[in-house]
Image 1 (cartoon, rainbow, N blue to C red):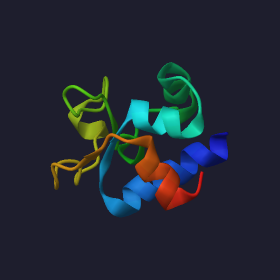
Image 2: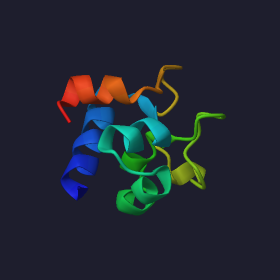
Image 3: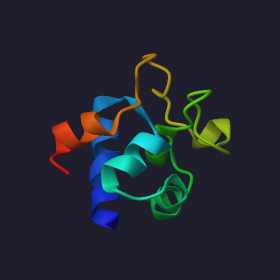
Image 4: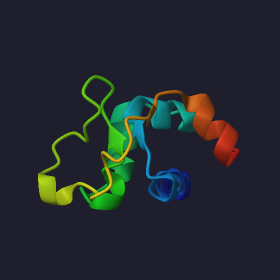
Length: 88
C-alpha cells in the first residue's frame, strides 16, 4: 500500500496539482484517516494532499508547503482521475 501512496504523491509532485485526501483514499480503497497515516511526515512533497473544503494541507506550516502549491486553482477531487492516470 505504501508504494501506491508514493506513486500518487510522485504523480502530484510532477503534475504540480493538489488532490483531496478523500480522492486519494478512495482511489486506494481505504479511509481518509488511514491514508493520512500512510502519508507520514509533513513535507513539501506531501503538501499536495489537501482537505476538500479549503483546499489546504491539514496542519502544515508555511515552510512545510511546496512552493508551487498555489500555482493553479485545480484540485483533483475525483478518485477516477487518479485511477485513470495511474492504473491503480
